[in-house]
Image (cartoon, rainbow, N blue to C red):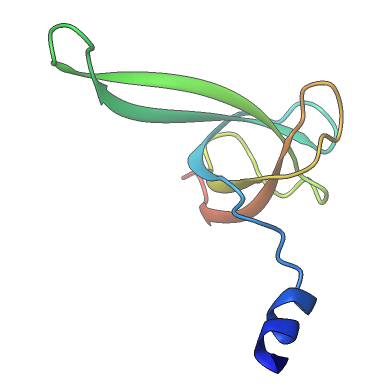
Length: 94
């Protein structure tokens, strides 16, 4: 009984999606645009193709610059388009 109570008391935030991509724009204040490229087979011909999607992410300290590889994580809606936030900068642009 006690172990069940301990498990229910702990509130987990759920599994938040994470993506790794490159910063393509940092001209807005506290916002970056991250392009995530994934490889997937074509539905009919099965050839592996690249698909890309851009996410607007919140960057509180304006740390990320264009060309950086970053990890973003899903969060509550911060604006009309921002539903992701910067988790870490994996590598800086050269």
